[in-house]
Figure 1 (cartoon, rainbow, N blue to C red):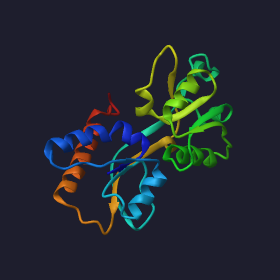
Figure 2 (figure 1 turned 120 degrees about the vertical axis):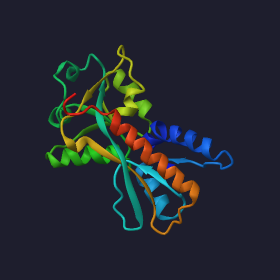
Figure 3 (figure 1 turned 135 degrees about the vertical axis):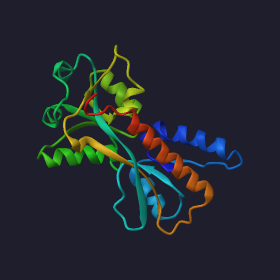
Figure 4 (figure 1 turned 45 degrees about the horizontal axis):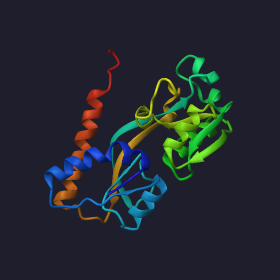
Amino acid sequence: IGATLTLGSTLLPELAQRFAERYPGIELRVTVANGEAITSALCQNQLDLALLETRVLTSELHSEEIGSDRLCAVLSPQHPLAALKNPLTIEQLAQHPLLVREKGSTARAVLENAMAKNELSPHILWESASSDALVRAAARGLGVAILPEELAQTSIDDRLICLRTIEGASMKRGRVVAWHQDKYLTDSMQHFLALCRNKALEQKAAQPTANS
């Protein structure tokens, strides 16, 4: 099983635990890397299934949506943007040094696409494959980290950092489970897919409705 760095930290451990309960005799081998690397491994048939944050754009792969997440801004409570009204705009973010994931990651691609759509050039100060490194840099006031909200929530400490939502649908990412179109789906793989679908239903049920 493959997963992006975000989904390998947030979603996959729970799915792997549920899978092990159903198939205790099957060893689930996992590769966690950025979206570009995981997609490449799927195309080369090095993985059976993979969890990604965007629908794949190659005809070699089949994908099924299993939920969504959003990017958010992580910053020091002393940062000038922390005093502004929530949500922040992409224009406001473009005026400050940004701490971002490495090229090849879905989070980086979503940010750059949102900036380009608004004809803005991001001021990228740090880039790292480590979300923890970006959170720590943000806590020191070195810039604004742009990270998946669910992942950032696990690092939040009100004394050191705060989170701000970012305005616009362009900062939302779809989650998908993907596999090679020629891959035969065994019973155990079908069960893993069912776990992904059930988790997506749980996430949808937990989201507030428009009237709540």
